[in-house]
Amino acid sequence: DAKTTQPPSMDCAEGRAANLPCNHSTISGNEYVYWYRQIHSQGPQYIIHGLKNNETNEMASLIITEDRKSSTLILPHATLRDTAVYYCIVRVATGGGSNYKLTFGKGTLLTVNP
Amino acid sequence: EPEVTQTPSHQVTQMGQEVILRCVPISNHLYFYWYRQILGQKVEFLVSFYNNEISEKSEIFDDQFSVERPDGSNFTLKIRSTKLEDSAMYFCASSRKGTVLETQYFGPGTRLLVL
Image (cartoon, rainbow over all chains, first blue to last red; front, side, top):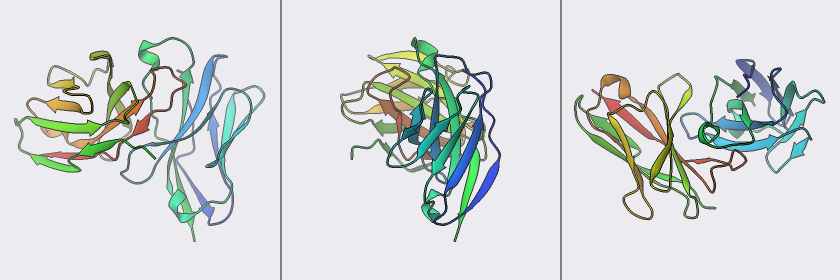
């Protein structure tokens, strides 16, 4: 799986959009970008994933650059409960075996301030 | 909404003792996983399990660890002889299928403290 780089921490004001960047410059054509988050000491929670098109669900939007070397997770109206560590994970889409596991990095600690 | 559950939420044990951590995956899921997170460190993959067999295991998952699906609902992680360095949060996860596009759903974790 391709390596990802995320800032260690970010702040956001409550009610504002939180934009979390991720660099994955070595991503290959069959690798998906996944985002999970972990609220303090809880189990990781799936947010969204995408291949090359922008994606949106009830939690967030995922913007992937045209060259796919970076992406941004957008929480449109951050709340205090969105304070968490956000993980950007790149995963190969084909095959089995080692593709099953999730490989977590250090992620970005997003702190939403009142 | 269906969720993965884990018991106990906290477990304190003496070094050298055996512990069994229990998980109830989401009912129609077929793939099961254990991860662990030492305090202040990354979430690390331990093992994946499908069709009553280990699909993959990490270097961490040595002979002291074993997994089992003893019945149709539970999925367990056993540590035979705990060490101090086994102290961590242990997360169970499950997914419908094993493909990378299937979301893994995580339980709330068991905090294991080895004294």
